[in-house]
Amino acid sequence: MKTEYTNSSSKNIKSIEHEAFCYYYSNLADSNQRIISMLNKKRKHPKEKSRLHERNKNRERYDFAKLIENCPELKPFVILNKYQDESIDFANPDAIKMLNRALLIHFYGLENWDIPDGYLCPPIPGRADYIHHIADLLRQNNYGKIPTGSKITCLDIGTGANCIYPIIGSNEYDWQFIASDIDPVALQSAENIINSNRNLQGKVKCVIQENPKDFFYGVIPKDGYVDLSICNPPFHASAEAAMEGTMRKTRNLSKGKESKPNLNFAGQSNELWCEGGEARFVRNMINQSKKFAESCFWFSSLISKESNLKSIYQALTEVNATKIETLPMGQGNKTSRIVAWTFLNKEEQQKWKNTRWNGQIPKKKNE
Image 1 (cartoon, rainbow, N blue to C red):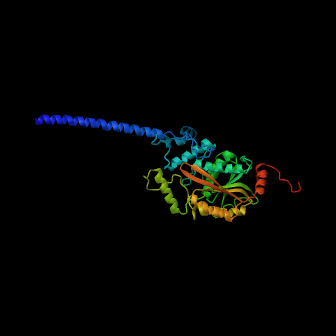
Image 2 (cartoon, helix red, strand yellow):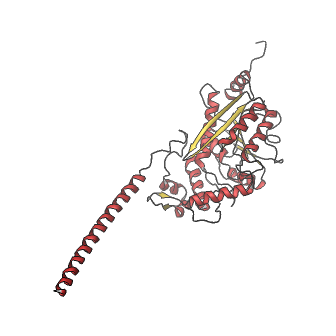
Image 3 (cartoon, rainbow, N blue to C red):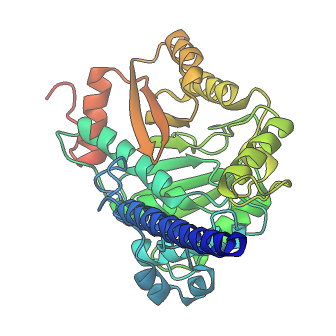
């Protein structure tokens, strides 16, 4: 009886084990199916990045087949992410640079683009948004029409080695650019980009800013005019803060695996930080802009940190800016804005747009 009982128990145990096995893997299969279903849902991306400007050429998801067709060097950097979508490793600086090159060739007609190692390699969509939003600001002052062509001159303060703003602005609106920088190496890189692309030649003038504390002196010609100035100011207030920000961004991109900063977007010290950070940099620009009140229609700067707005508005009030505009921008989960200001009164604005933008000959006082 004892033996029979043991055999019977063994059979029962095996039966239970079999049922448990089937139950476990049945649930596992269901769980896997749910996971696959969730992944499939995540792969259904929006057709457009709706927070980008409506004229931004980067609103749709990157078509890597077309990008590789225009820039074959991108191909080795294209990978499948965890959702099985084509992408790149955004923690890899070489991949970032190659993606930028491909975007500039594909969307903006460049033949060649490169920058020295260690210099800022900015995200193209956000830079394009600045240009489009500032073009809309000009449209508000020009009977609802964006002024285009060589009659518009834009000053890019701190153009950097990448020369991104002049590339996009000249391509989209045929504007002329003055590209200034305090770094001779960065400016030489910008000149190399201009000289190696036929569609930029004759449209961008590079000017070295001899005094790092100046923004407009030595750049805007005496008795000269620019229609707008743009700037992407250094964000951080110290080298330590810049390093901390870089490490935080690296950890986010690499899911916390990286312990050392990987400069995926890179950047020299003057590109990433200055004493007092973004707020002081822009306040100094505002104070100096007052002395060029009649030489520029719209001054502007990107403001990344919302908490800096209060002190910037205060500085603009102190210099008696006649009009201040804040233009919101969004890219992914990031929100920033452009602050623009002018010192021209309504009569001066009218005269500016009629003569410079629309080619009217100013009337004499007795006419």
